[in-house]
Image (cartoon, rainbow, N blue to C red; front, top):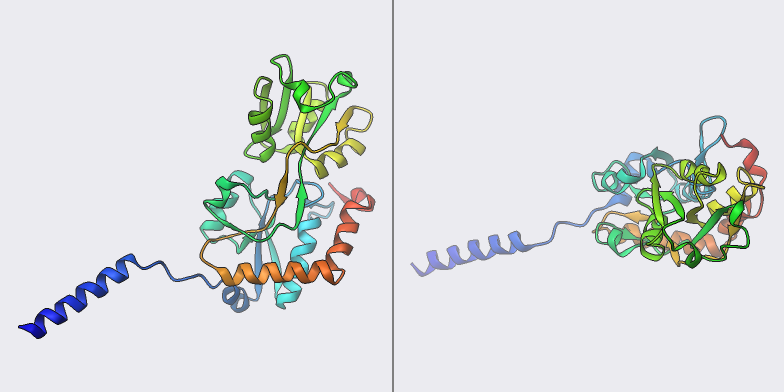
Length: 268
């Protein structure tokens, strides 16, 4: 009887431990190696991070960083264009290995995914219609019901408007291109979005039509997102970026996309 009780107790204890045990950690690095390909989720359209050139290929700052990462892994790379509002669900359902798409670290996103160390810091700035030049000097001046402010759905630009310019009338758009055109064409007063995108728009499509309030009024670290439960993949990504920032790789890629406008003539 004692033996039976001991066996029963052992079985029950083992079952309880299994029931309460965490799921086994992922091993994305092994999956990438077996596949021979790094799968990267991104949404084309965020200049200069990821966009399509005239030949239809994905190009940009994030694209070149991921190509460098794939070379370091000695695998190929494939970019999976994914709508922004579905990009985290697509990562979680294993449509790709990571998100590299100019994603800001936020606490709400961090509840769903893990982030590697930030690879660039940006912030929200404002493109104003020309008629407001000199009248509006900061985001605070736009906090009134008479102003129409645009941004892209589901972004930190949208969050910044709702949190910091709550009295203005907010208009949400599916893409940043649609949202900024509202201001360029005079149908809205201001467009709130990340500094790099706004800086490019102010000197290209918006040149002579908008005023760029180029002092960022938010702090936004951008980072690569991965599924939770894989510390080895996070460790690899962080070490890759540390190496890239100290061997000249990062500086070369940064200069190509942020210190030159040569790439703009080849964009759709």
